[in-house]
Amino acid sequence: MASFVDRVVLHVSGGNGGHGCVSVKREKFKPLGGPDGGNGGNGGDVVLRVSHQTTTLLDYHHSPHRHAQNGGPGMGDWRVGHQGETLVLSVPDGTVVKSPDGRVLADLVGEGAEFVAAAGGQGGLGNAALASAKRKAPGFALLGIPGDTRDIVLELKSIADIALVGYPSAGKSSLIAAMSAARPKIADYPFTTLVPNLGVVQAGDVRFTIADVPGLIEGASEGRGLGHDFLRHVERCAAIVHVLDCGSLEAERNPIDDLDVIERELEKYAVDMSYAGVDGDVVPLNDRPKLVALNKTDLPDGKDMAEMVRPELERRGYRVFEVSATSHAGLRALGFAMAEIVQAARDAVRTAPPKVAPAVLRPRAVNEARFTIRREERNLEPLFRVLGDKPEKWVKQTDFANEEAIGYLADRLNRLGVEDQLFKVGAKPGDTVVIGEDDAVVFDWEPTMMTGAEVLTGPRGTDIRFADWERPTRAQKREEHEDRKAAKAAAREELEAERRAGIWTESTRRRASQRDAAREQVDEGEWADDNDR
Image (cartoon, rainbow, N blue to C red; front, side, top):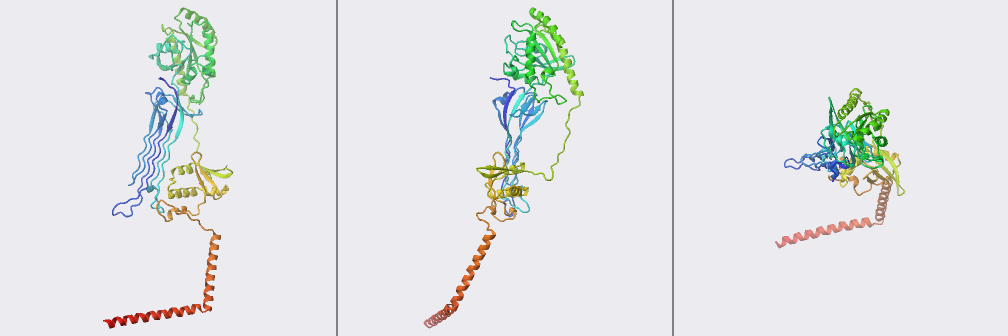
């Protein structure tokens, strides 16, 4: 099972915002309590934080999916939902955060350095917060916005001042064990070291860190061995120490050829922009100060080999030290040479002025659009896509099961100028309008015929603009008016014809005689009742 992991792909997502609450105050002796729905809580963030107690990314290798706590929903009586708890993920010092396409997002160096990997979603407003002088009792609330979801790549780059490079079994781990208190695994077979080793060295008043790169062999830049995977751990170093094996028993190898191979591999390695100097430039590994340590000089053949290759190395401009990790010979001089380079690099950082980019203020132009409309085509029909932070955010906050909420969204889009812009780009009633790119909402666009839904009467949670009726056009109203006029004229002509024929007069006399007969029958009935008594 892996015990050291220096590169992982992490799937993080912020907490979702809680939904707002729709509630009306109902209490005895308080007939007009009004809306009292509380706001939803914000979702928690996912934060990466440097901790010296964390030395590997192994936990995230086993559990790559991390999600922050969701915000709580709002409740009645103006109670606000709870805020989602921030999820803090501890990472080692020197962790570089990248996007999946390799773009550097953050370089976390130093205890407590933080980076918000995924922001939590905003909580929705309750109907109490949406109430106004015109909309006194909203029957809807805003939904919470989902948190950010993203994939990030974490790469660990050790914070080391000196990098030890060389062939497997050259004695790099033995040098670290001899010069510091570190105790790496040491054996007499190649690729003993499978993870970078760190050691702290004290040379006079200078205290610095050294690290080795395991498994660097010829062809490492093409994926052979292990060195190319661990070269990122020496990108932050101030100097490179070539550890050459002078006691090798292989006939086809010698220290000069080993040095040339390692130099070519370092030259092929491209240092990314995750770490730069004080001037903002990245120095390639091959251009950094170098020392050469001729190791295993305690062996008879090793001493002779060191004396043979030293003139050639010095002729190339290297500072050469004959050392032995077993007898500790030459280690003191090598340590002070390392300390000299480290101190010079630290002094350069302190004396060089920091490169700070000037602040540029770019106020939003008066006529700058807060959204854009892109004309597309789908199934040979026009399609208009509305893009912008505000429209896309408002769509996420809308409960499309509530007519009043949809009307509120229509009013917001109209005030933003979306409808006017749709007219300008040639949209017609009935055309398809899409808001957003991914998970977009599709509408069959109908221009708003009347605004101000807050002053329109109707049951709570409804909008009369969505009722199943069609507003008649002027032509339809004119036609209905003419039909009514024609019907009235026909009725008048019929009555006039009946009057002239005497039907209207006879019918009047007949009704009068019928009334007189009814009165006589009533009078006779009352007289008969009196005689009986």
